[in-house]
Image (cartoon, rainbow, N blue to C red):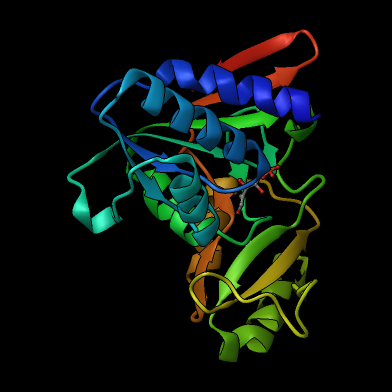
Length: 226
Ligand SMILES: O=C(CO)[C@H](O)[C@H](O)COP(=O)(O)O
């Protein structure tokens, strides 16, 4: 699995050109990309800036020598590169296992080209088949939102931390509800519906945003395009 992640991460480097501003995603697959990007910037003396989507990607960018800029310091983002938890046949995504979905969506929505890196186990026929949809919520509203979400035929669970007592706190100081749907028929519609609930900051359905998905398989990298 790690080899597949490295292979897709290496393939993503072929989209990188000098003078680009690159959105830096979050997660284990993207970590390899950041490492390879740092190596390439150093070896080829490229003038590239990264816009991090999380504390994780910011710290990795610092470690790998990728110069960083905040979103409000750049005019535009040329490409963004990130992983995903599920990809459907129309290249709609579920993201947010790493709880970084809000900043990821803010950056990736604005990228000229959004490139997604996955292995073939992430491909599904219908979003929500395997993974819950993470929803970032204002802490005071978590219980009310969890109850409201049941109207969508879904169950919401507050995500608990592993190395801290109590719930996961996002980079923005919020909670995460993991929402398991009975069925998501229309990802774009559900993405919009969830965001209309007061107290919801953002949700992990990324409909109609991905431009290219690079899929790592034992036979090599497959490129899916919208
Ligand atoms: O959305 C994310 C973080 O919020 C990640 O990109 C997603 O969970 C995929 O991670 P990995 O490459 O480790 O499987």
